[in-house]
Length: 490
Image 1 (tube, rainbow, N blue to C red):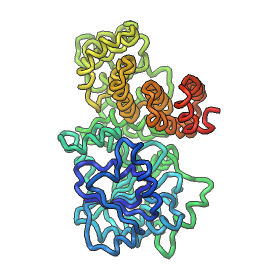
Image 2 (image 1 turned 90 degrees about the vertical axis):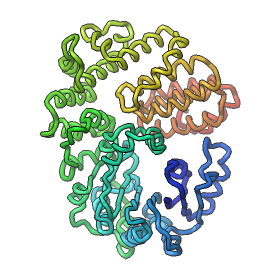
Image 3 (image 1 turned 30 degrees about the vertical axis):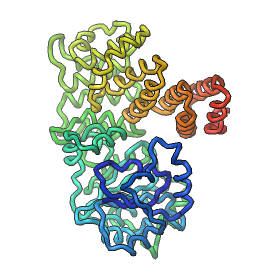
Image 4 (image 1 turned 45 degrees about the vertical axis):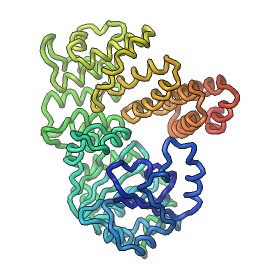
């Protein structure tokens, strides 16, 4: 059973996996529920049509005081912590009320936007949670957006539970894959504080209480020091980082690569590479990958030196060196000019299949690619070349022009993006697929995503491509695209 505080746009409710049998949602504002119902027909899935879901119109604290039931999980996601409807949901008193309504092994999940806190407020928030719950862990699920706090009276043991989940057929696994979590290492890479690091970081920080609500009084007035992923990485590198040493069964290179996708993540990646538990060849490969991510021209030769002699099996360091070289030198691989390390490509089944797929795509042979689709679909989601396999599965579907295949490609692109393909280029690809489909709902969704991603980063080339795409649309779709984009490409 789960209680969700705040309906918002319904995305959290929509994402609740099938393993949860009973979902209660407390929403303060009736118009939020009305807006969700109004848009129900334009959604792929209407969360309020889920028979498991019961919506309660009330303040969350009032709703909890009016019930004696307990929940296995309580998820609190109020938005701005200085507003009247949300500020009292970040205090010790609220956390204690939550604790009283959790099952003995229940978990409290608290969300906050990074931009709402500086280092001092983050310390206070963690200290307040630790004052109620002895076990608190903190995760950053995606770069630059938000933090997720997991809290409970029992040890959370997220990593070992994640390992068991990834080996099972639990329906929750599919939900995690849609969020880019394909291996236990992905959970470890998203972790910013384990319970020990959380305690060190919080120290003796002032608690957030109803009588002294620091988030309410300070959050809205922050001018400098607001957190983002880079600032948080620098903060953790200094004083309270999670121990970078990893158990032998954990794939350090997978974690290093996940960190390298985060702004400022090279600091944490280097700490893992240099940890005493990291084997020498893995350390070499990690430093080569870090150099590659930072644009170091010497990274290529360093990666080549990690490849064994022809006929010698690739170890873990050699595999990641090979995949990094392939992705960096794709044109050479496509033209079959990989040179001395071409034999290693041929010796690795997934690498060989991806290289062949790139050649077929360059030769514009989508029919042959289609015949390889079943094999491409078997590339594990935790594999470094999984996004490349997804791309090839998109290529032949997009070339087919068939509506059902284009819809599949649109969904595959969403999966490809959460497994490592950057924005806003990925959103542009989805917008092109929606335009081919002539689907105004998908087009609007893609254009809204494009608008948000272009607002976060400079993308002049993408802006020009978006302008060309919009100009080529038929009038009815052009109106949809322009309304969604606003001033973004003008």
